[in-house]
View 1: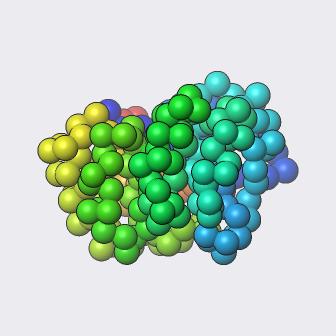
View 2: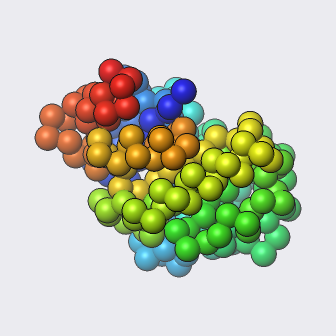
Length: 220
């Protein structure tokens, strides 16, 4: 089963609650929240208080992606704010296993994200501790970027690795996902697709964007 997680990074920040409700009504499986600190990535978005406000606006799982340095300092705050999944970057922690256990103890599902240039081998020995592996298909930090074609092979490699070592783990992709690239990443093995501008800024609105994405996957 393929899941779609609209990314609030491409939504209208003046209407976050309405946008969250609209995504849920359009059939989103998860709502993807990009948390950026201006240090790990060259952009700043929002923190736990905004996550809590979005949590009050919808009931679907909040797929919360921490693109921040020292993520261990903020795990409890985002968990209390209502994050369902907390995904941290392998590149951001010197003690990754400890961090993953901290997320689990906080009551959230556990995710790891990898930047495009980071090898999958970096996380092979902690796969038993996670629920979701996020392969970034653009450099993190800004929405609206084009899919990096070389990531198709990495997704396929990740699929083989998970099938062998951790079949319970969901394989998610984020970056440049639209009606053209969605079938490509699904064929490679992705099962959760983060889509931002393809749905939130679609010419026919959010419903039109979701419909086009589903149709490209034969889900409409």
